[in-house]
Each structure stands twice: as C-alpha cells, then as structure tokens.
Image 1 (cartoon, rainbow, N blue to C red):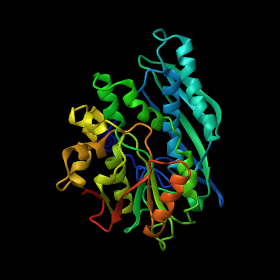
Image 2: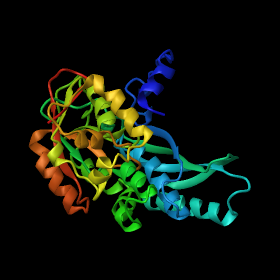
Image 3: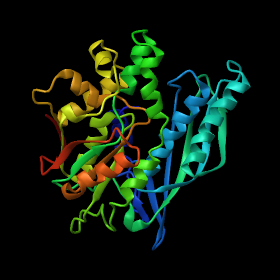
Length: 341
C-alpha cells in the first residue's frame, strides 16, 4: 500500500501515549521500540512480500532480509523471528514452499537471530515474511527523526529494483542483467549496521539536546522509494533533504528500463505522494523516477555529521559495503521537503 493511502487510513488513529514506548507510529518509523529497563529496549517489526523472483529459496531469503532490515534501521540487533506465510493450498508443491522457508531461515541464521515459530494461512497468492524482535540500548536508538542540518546522507545499496524486474518481466532484459539486483536484495544490512554503530553516540537521535558527533538518523529504503523514505526523515526531523542525483548508486540497466517506461504502480504512487513536498528543479525525469523506485530489500539511508561522513564511508567500503555513496545532505528548511539537484 502506498504512503498516501496508508496515511489516510490511519489519520484518525490516535493511540494513547505510553511512557515506555520510545518509538511509536507518530513518525512512520521502521519499527516500534519499547523500553524494558534503563539499559534495554525491545524493537518490533513485521513485513512480508509477494515473490519478486521465481526461485523459491532466493525469494524466501530476500523476503527475510527485507524484514530484518527494519531492525537494523533502528540501530538494533535482531533476536527472534516468526515466519508469516500465505500459501496457495493446491497450486504449489510442498517442496516449493519448503524451499521458501529454507531461504528465509538462511537469512535468519546469518543475522544471528533465532527462528521461534510462525503462522501459516491459505491464500490465493503466495506471500512470505517475518515478524522480528530485536534489542537495543535505549540511549542508542536511531530513528528517522534525528537528522540535523549539515548532516551528510549515505546510501548503502543501489537503486532500481522494481523497474529492473518490470523490464525483465516484459522480456526487455535477460536474467543475467538482474543478477546484481538479486544479489543486493539478498544481502543483509547487517554489516552496514554494525559498521555504523561505531559512529553512534548516546542520545544521537535526540533532537532536543546538543548534536552528538557521528550518526544522527537512520532508515531503510524499501517500498516507498528513496524519496518517500527521505520525505519521512525530513518530516520527522523537521529538515529538508537534498539529493545530488549524479551521486546515486544505481543497478545496471535500471535507468534504461525507466526510459522504457517499466514503472510499477508503487513507483508511480510514490511520485504522486512526494511531488507536493518536492523541488525537482531542472533534474531529468529519469532521475526523479529513480528516486521514487519502489525498492525491495534496499539499503540503509544514514544521516551522519559532516565531520564523520568520509570516515564512515571509508569504514563501510573497508567492511565490504562497496556500493555505499554520499548522496546528499540535510538542510535547514523548508522543513518536511526534499530537493533534487
């Protein structure tokens, strides 16, 4: 579901404040965070998707990686996972469904989390994902609402997954052409999250206090696209997000597929949502669509103090996050807007 429709549906929902709920629904963050004690908070999220690839094992792994990403996007460590499975009762062999779960378990195990069970229902279309619980120190929670003017923005994975697969589905590109995107979607954000942790100071996301060195804000880039998730960061942080489109990491052939009009409904919906709050300037339409691409299992978007940006980028590259790029900066206003230049 697109961000515009979702906001309309929950507009009248005003949950009562809970003192121990550190992060709730107010800023459309990646997960909820509940304080258990002075030094421990639980992070909870749920996500599931329909198949984006034909191979059941790879689909299961991508779906699990996509779900686990929300835990990493809060600066947290995944602890347990529950499978969420919607399986056609007759149309697929049990061996196929087993491979989906095996792919998910492969990602769960690599993350260090424990598979604790799950729930399965019959459905006309296969869907799979996880409900994940993680842990984080309450003072080290990262949110999408902590960005500071002057911060630099780092993106850890390339863009263009949905338009690539739309092009592949239309026969415009070959399987080999989508291989880099499949590998990217199958890769946990674990290494990137662990690397940036060395740049996080207590109270990093607390905009009421003095700005700390290092990382201030964090989110992951999934269905709402880079622009949609950046807009949530801009609104929550009361800043403007500025992207340098020439710096964006992009999967091979993604721009070509945009030119060929291989745009899914989610991508089109994302652009409709962000346009009222965006300044596209003289940027080419291809680049605009790229920032709106409805990603699956995308990278982390990191807001980090200018003084530490190059150091964090160097550390990410050294750790193997080779596609990470500095793609823009955080500006003082107008609040809740994004700018492409």
